[in-house]
Structures are given as C-alpha cells and as structure tokens.
Length: 142
Image 1 (spheres, rainbow, N blue to C red):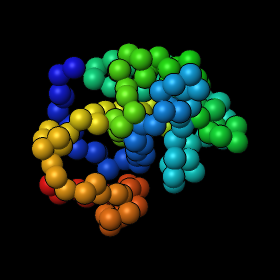
Image 2 (cartoon, rainbow, N blue to C red):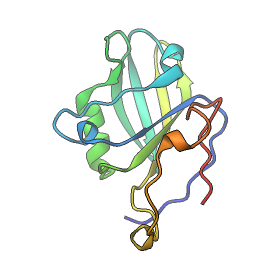
Image 3 (tube, helix red, strand yellow):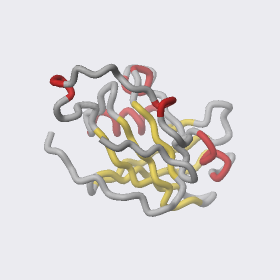
C-alpha cells in the first residue's frame, strides 16, 4: 500500500489508538477514548469515518457501558484499510450532533523506515511528555 501524506490536525478534538488484536480480529471492538467521550452523545448515533477520500457508515453506541462503534461497520473499515496490529489511527472529530457524528481518520502504518537497522532499545509512551489528548499531545522527534 503506498504511503500517504500525514495531514496536521486542525485543532478539533481527537483521539488516537494503536491497533491491537482485539481491534482487528473477530471481536472487532473499538470506540473513542479519553476526554472525547464526554463530548459525544450518550445515545446510539449514525457515524461516518472518512479516510483517504472514502467513507464508512456505522453507529456509535454512546448509551452502552463500553462506548464503541458497531462491530460490522468497524470491521468493514478495518478490512478495507488493511489495518494490522501495530498500526495507529487518529480520529479527529469534525461533526458532532445528536443526529450524526463524523470523524476524519488518518492511518499511521506500524512499519517505520529503518526500524530493522535500529539497534536501540524500544521506547514507550510513558517516556514522552503529554497525555496524548488534544490539549497535551505527544511530540515525537526523530
């Protein structure tokens, strides 16, 4: 899959996730995390994920204990974008109402150039300042 340009965030609320097995295997579970959940409706709302010029329709289940996207819609997004464990997704909230939620999604592939040649120890997010939330993002300088 060709590399795509990473676009800067616009300053709107966002959340991010590093894809794990539960996101891309038969459970296919994923939902917003962190402070952004407080901004979203506490009900089931039609939701659109836009990524690379395409759109995927699903439902955000905000009334459930585990606030997640519906399994079928999320599974379609995973398969169509060939998401793998270790990839990361950034979901920027571009529309939010009781009638519709829309996220602009950027996919960051887990294969980093030159990673095989690197002899250094792995790093962990706890080594970075910030929380990863929109008001205190991680800054990675390499």
